[in-house]
Length: 251
Image (cartoon, rainbow, N blue to C red):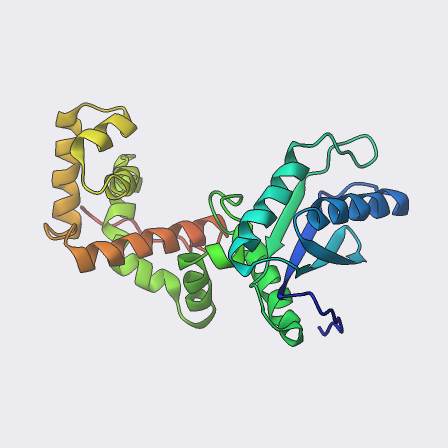
């Protein structure tokens, strides 16, 4: 997809895919929303162009201010829209947004366009889809999405996590939740028990089981990084309903 835009002020550009929750909107409603969006983001230092395609609006934002503040200003604009009383028809619209890679040259706007689509696709496959609208903030999920397109991601995930998944399914346990929380707390037993609302003795029992299933070295730096990556990949596959059924192993 090619866009031909030119401006002497622009220091770069970003494409924002904005999908409106499917409802019957009139052409006037859509036009009104585009004007409202443009007004908000012009106040944040962007020139805004819009292309509308059936409940999806593609905004091309040209950055007229410092590169270092563009994400902050975009977030401010999104926050204003989310917190406003703006309505389409009789309802407040539910926005699904994907903001592509920032590009410095307008000849690369197609890259921002493609990555805005990828951002929306990744959002659909995450447990918490609204954690970030920005391609530039997806980090590990971009890598997971890339790997998923080229390799059997489930096979690698199961190489690390199959014992935990099997144990939880067989005994209706909560080892995966415990593992996630323990890693998030950087191995702090006190904080982990607090977040899980369990007593320390119960946590010690679960950690012993994790050591048995994953190896006593599962918190060593390199192995821990691999396990954390595989947990994100597992959540990605589950969210996108692409995790195939596995046999429950004998534990």
